[in-house]
Image (tube, rainbow, N blue to C red; front, side, top):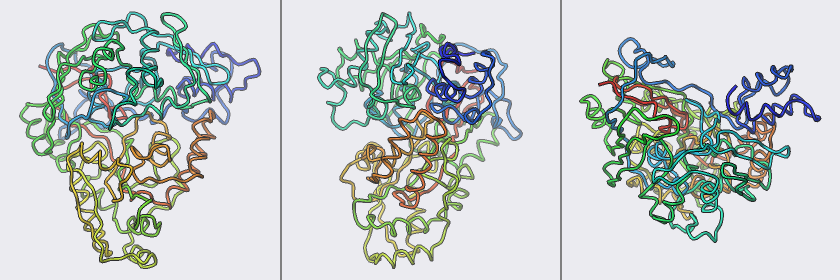
Length: 589
């Protein structure tokens, strides 16, 4: 029985609680069904019943990540299934990881892109964490917690003896100061006073009514209403706990001087070149094996592969699909894969013509051969989207009608909508690879441009470097279509459906500016609903409205893939794509 199960075990059947109610409340603790079953068995009960075969509501994708150092498959590369690494870990050494673009900041509550997240996952801890290779919630800076009967009050028992990298103590005072910076607009360092930031604070903390210190190691957070995904969201890299001392010292320059409690501490950030972190030898979760980790910005996929083969770098974050065959054949390399918690598409600003006409949006979907994209651009490591969220999400709606390739249907819809084929549409794109788009922005956009031209839609590509592209695509006044995508952050369906298609997600995540009161009502109900089955039904209802409205050109969901030197051991993929648990990683020398 894990810590969360121990925290929950005191809530035995009784006081009018049914087994279904027990399982439902267990979901708020982030418990999986097996964990709930073990508690019920210990109580002399049975886990059978309508709620016992579902995944806990604050959990999400439970697919296990492949771990580096697994037994190589024939032809080189790592086995696609997790295999125990029996080698003895070696201490010391530096691992260099490439990523296609630079970070935009290192303050977890003020940035929202994976390149920043990769570094922050090593620097910060959250109150909760994801279990190894999954999005199932477990303990972190909070060792355990209790939830009130009305599911509104969370009492966190904080881990004692933990220090931030600057030597200051992590305790309930620090936790309150962290929350106050996020939620108190009168705070001198209120995060929201920064300009041009992207944040998940509203997504995670909008239902928080109050927070207080109960004693030195106890934090109490009270909600306005139940928030089923709260514990899962606290584990996101975007919910890292920052040092109050560092906030006082650096103010908003914390973006460039991050201080957390994680397994590695910040050393330097040379813009557009690299970010370096070093071992936190006093890490509460166990001293890391590595001395340093360097995140090196290498935009060109072919250069990444050359560096990996030469030993100059040890990990490629998003290897290009065309390099997969080469990597598999090389016995000195390994390829780690995991079903992707990702979606890739084109955001169509529904508040601007011609995208305000649903027929045009549907036509742009029918014009694209997604199966062909999966095979030729993504080397088979992708599948066409069949719903507004990826298939591995637990509220995936599998009843929707796919937009199969049908250029004649596309032409018919455009004609019906009186679409002006003489006009030229602008399409904003980026050039680099992304976790949800390993083929790269330019290649995907060029392919789409070709398909659309066949149905009479003329498109001009406008490519920007990553930071400028984010600013353009997240501009609330955006009137042109833009390449878009998403990697799941917490394993909860709301992270996709609410963020990407809810009114509250405009403009950072919801770049199509899609706003539907019926959808918003369903999403609000789902976020407050503690019952897993009812939440799933509400999200599926929302998807059935969103899908035919086509705020996106629905493209693909990709397989998470990372290429490594065979000398790298102990890296386990997480569905959120982040470099969590890097204290387990070691380098064979």
